[in-house]
Amino acid sequence: MVFISNILRRFPWFAGMGLLYLAVSPAFDVADASGGTWRFAAPQQRLFRPLLADPTEARLAVSSNLDDRLNGDIGGSWEAADYAWDADSGLRLRTGIHAGVFSKLRRSGTTFPLETADYLIGFHADLGNDRITGRFEYAHVSAHLADGYDGPEKSMTYSREYFTLYGAREMRFAPGSAIGSAIGSARVYSSLRWSNHAIPDVRRWRVQGGAELIFRPLTGEGGATRAYLACDVRLFRDGDISINRTAHAGLLFHNEASRGLRLAFVYYGGRSEHGQFHRLEDDYAGIGLFFDL
Image 1 (cartoon, rainbow, N blue to C red):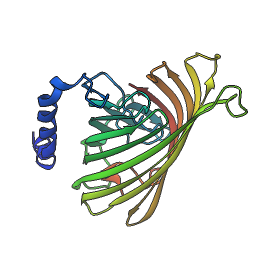
Image 2: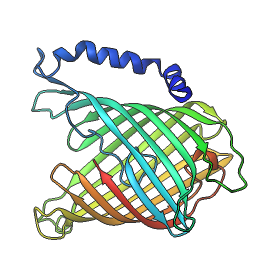
Image 3: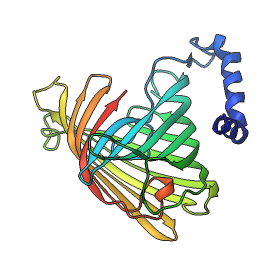
């Protein structure tokens, strides 16, 4: 209850947004005077698709590291409202909330004691069409040591709120082109983050960039299995300037709505993304299973 009360105290607009959506929901799913269409709580995915190699995305995933550690992530989003302009522009606005838990476990025989967990909750607004998309988000994250941790680090208060602005450009290649004979699509993106409240006073800003390549179906056009490559780089100050790197190489098993799962070799290098271990280096390789909902 203390965690929930802290969230409500720092995010009073969450309650306001909920009341606003309930108040105006009867008007959703109808066209407005300009020809646009509102929809409320429609079963939709994010307009700005979650980044494949970003370990801070709210997602459902498990990855086994080669150093007897296990990362387990539980998260997702609820899309509260969607507005589509006229069909000619293809422009959409979609808003909602997202939340996640990012945990690190240690392998000990046949058990996996929990060492630390980071909790995330945030509001997002996505804008774009099928090629160019942007995302604005405001989120809270806090990190906590668990009773399964037996290392030298002491528990501390780790809590922050931040604004992040993302932009992405997706390119799709015709099957008959030189590039398109092997690659189906590519996406490049970048983001800028600023923290308005941080305990401790580190990582006040972050600059991010990355790219994703999705190859042609391995079983011919219309197939559900594709190879993919993704890389993500995050630059920030935590005492000194640090660069975190993540790379994926694996297979996507997706349906036409891009829902399914991914199996990938994962490399991570740099400082830990877990708040309680933010000062520590965290370099590993492993195998990950990602469920794209």
